[in-house]
Length: 291
Length: 329
Image 1: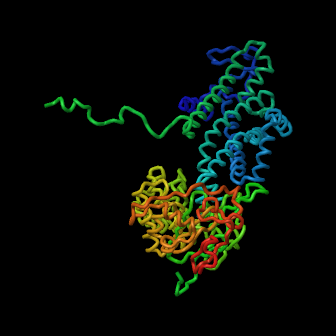
Image 2: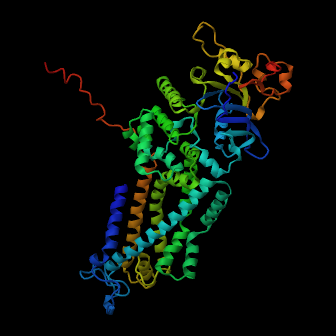
Image 3: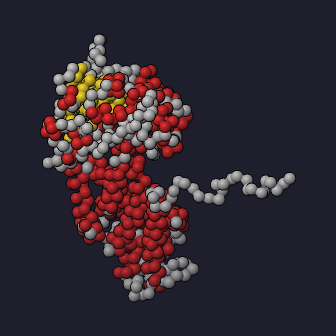
């Protein structure tokens, strides 16, 4: 399943990276439009039709992958770093530190993220950087909880006591003994955080809070929705960005669950193998048959 | 056994008491008023039933108790320096460099995701940060060879080692900073008899070769008799009896030690029947008012129920906590 996820993501990545080469038109170029070009159905010239401004939907779709992936990856990066720091500190130090950090996490967890994101983006200017920042600082809560619980269990392992007996300081123990055992979990989790960040970016853009100068899938949905795409029956302008979002999020989810299974052996894998190749002694009778 | 030369002890523990305070109003006296000393090159055996405070006391020597643990009284003099006076940062310098510990169930004391070589090197760099890499690698290889593991296996991970080998890796790690004292906390539990013998021989040999002092925590009285110089018998957190091996095995004075010796097979007279001491050690939250051994003691009398016997010093380095020895010298 994780392979399906990797393939799906690779396709999206290739689209995003090589957008100028793949896309038939440049969506940022000035174009002259006449009335026939608006919401024109798919044709040989425009394989997926045009949108409300007469631009090629396919090209928009390909360029839109860029924004969605950039926001997704960078926002998730911020989230995982904040969540990792808070989770490890809370789990390792315990006591008052843990109490304060975890209550803060709980508060962040119960505040509905989307309305807060809407407010924060509305207060700042809706640029790409701001959107990444807002999504990043709102999405770390589950990572923090997960990392804390893993840290708590690693902290009790005997080699941590041994490291203390050696005379290592806290920073050393966290870096060399706790972090390597928490990292796999953070990686698996970060994949799921990316998918959430992409969804959130699309939602914000759909609500009209995206960067107006950048084409993203959420933005395309917003335009199609608010500028008469539905009433004129231009399904192509709606379906394509929706499909893109589902494609990437599904790919990430597949990959995330796959990684989780690899990193958390208790879920499935076992180091003892089972197989018909295990017994290699010669079959009885086969050797004796020859005189 | 009076020592004619009287060299200063390497480690002198005096009246050490450790309590656990899981909450503010609970004081569990895990170790009370224990004294012993350890000279250079000596092997001290620490024996007692499970849960009688052996590990707690060893951890408190390194100031590594669990969160609820408190050292409430006593002195731990290492080369005349009281370890309990030190700042936490200074204490880190003593850990492993002066006193190393091989943990109980030491095979779990290795980090599963790092190579064996890396982890032994960690112990060295922790105290000598600027060790050049070639020197470090050579030292780690030497240590592995010293405990009978081929140096080439250093690049492997702990799961590729057997239990006995992991134990030997821990011994190698304990020797990494050339400490003066190694605490071996049940170094042979969960190992089979052959490996046990190997590990103990290794410890004894290393102690003789490197002039190491070893505190051996164990349940095995036979091992203690064979390799140790002195024995400290603990019961429910207090010293039952402390003395040299000969005194403890041949002329024990505390009823608990006497029964303990009788509970162990005697090879010179194998037809003796073994006894067992009825009952269990007391729980820490329900200690008897008097002597802690009184409920199980065959020689208990009225006073034992009321008063806790102090630790009587019978002669130099022979102590017992029993009213029966009061006034004896």
